[in-house]
Structures are given as structure tokens and as C-alpha cells.
Image (cartoon, rainbow, N blue to C red):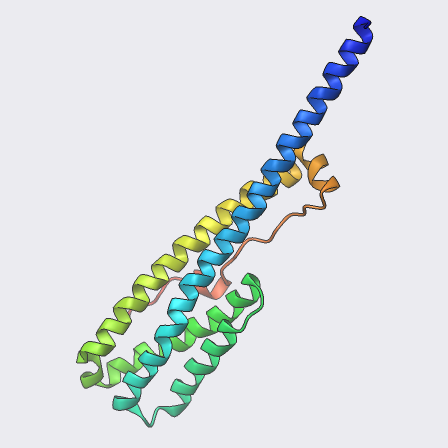
Length: 184
């Protein structure tokens, strides 16, 4: 075997190994993005399961606030039925707004504000919101790594061959970035 043949064989071997390792890394990152989507979904399911309990608790104190309660249930159902993470984000933003109005009701109904079930549900929702926030941060970190693989050389070549494309980050609306105004 000539030196040229050996050099060509070594180069081809290096290219094949590089391709295989890069492809496997892309597959692992794709699976990680799907896992992180599932984590968000699991936390959101917990949230969706709590909302009817919260609404029932509020009904006992503020049954005439029907529009507010219906808006919460409608937003919950829309978010729960969303087919993708991005669609769920839109539904969850509506649910956040609706939940804020429920918690605002507690200010108008002192008995509700002191109700143990309401307080426990509010605490559970707060904890789930924190878990969802952390899951979203993790999701965006995984998406960043995946997108880096899809866009940087030489992994972008393997990504193009394997039809891997850049994924979208979860983003918050401009209105949610605004400072909360506290009035006394």
C-alpha cells in the first residue's frame, strides 16, 4: 500500500468518524430538546390540573364574578389543547392574565383571601410557575446548544445532510417585560 493510499484512508476515516460523532451529537441534542419540551408540558399539566380547583374555591366566595372565572377556564383549556410548545406559550400567556384577575379578586373578598384552600392553591401555583420558569430556561439553553450545532462548522454540514434545522426559543411578550407598578 502506498503512502498516498494510507493518507487518503486516514483522511476518509477521520471524516467518517467526525461525521458519525457529529451526527450522534445532533441526535442527542434533538432528543434533549424533546425532553425539555416534555418537562415544560408536565409542569403545565400540573398547573392546568390546579386551575379548576382554584376556580371552584373562588366560586364559593365570588360566584357572581362569572366572567372572570369563565375566562380562566377558557384560557386553561386553550393552553392545555395547544399542539406545540410555541402554541402553548400563547395559551399560557392568556392563562397568566386570567389567573392574575383571580388573584386580584382575593383583594375584594377578604374571606377568600383568608381561605386555607385558596392560599394552598395559590402557593402550589406559585411553585409550579417557578418550575415552569426553570424548565423554560433549560429549554432555551438546550435550544441554544442545538442551534449552535446546526450553525457552526463542521457540524452545520452534518445538520444539513440530516435535515436538522434551527429551533425557536421561547420568548416573553414585551408587556411581560415591563416593571410591575406597586401602588399604596
